[in-house]
Image 1 (cartoon, helix red, strand yellow):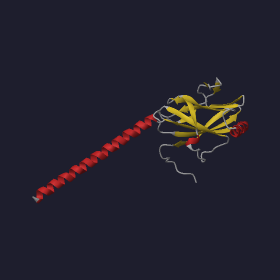
Image 2 (spheres, rainbow, N blue to C red):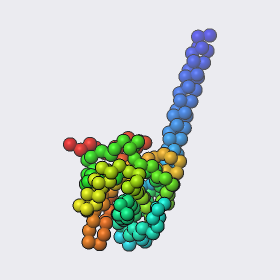
Image 3 (cartoon, one colour):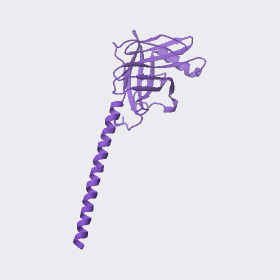
Amino acid sequence: MAISSLATAGGTLALAATTYASVRSANRAARTAELSLLAAMRPLLVESFDDDRALRVNFKDVAGINVPGGGAAVEIIEDNIYIVTSLRNVGTGIAVLHGGYVYPERRVSSVDHVPLQEFRRMTRDLYIPPGDVGYWQIAFRADEDNEEMRAGLLSAIEGGYLSVDVLYGDYEGGQRVISRYGLGREERGWQLATIRHWQIDREDVRPRED
């Protein structure tokens, strides 16, 4: 009787161990599949190439602002400020743009972005397919925006440098990223340079700066 009980207990233990290993293996496989799916959907926006096509961008009150490849457009029309950046999606998934924030200064990578609630939301959905070129746009209008903020932007435009943070993610609303770009005015116009990317929905694995 004792031997039979030990045999039963041993069998039960072996079955439990096999079940645990199987569940653990299945969980690993499911996690691997999930990571592969997310990687296939992940966008990443950088400045477009200099030889990329120029884009003509419309606002609700202004049509046909031209933005060249590798650059940006900064226009002041009837006291309103219009900013457009030419971006290339080097990721593997469609980028859905959510909003952005403009700094009237040179904003380096070591300075954190503002809280998400301070980003200005897009009034329409903008998409940039993987491997393609698109744009982000924003306007500051005299009859809508804070005069002090506009004055700071006008001063920065006169000085020839702005910084922009753009918030975007995948087509399901996840994998959100904030990408920072520097806008500098040169002889050939406003040029764009990628400064930094922040992962919003997962931990940043890069080491902290001293």
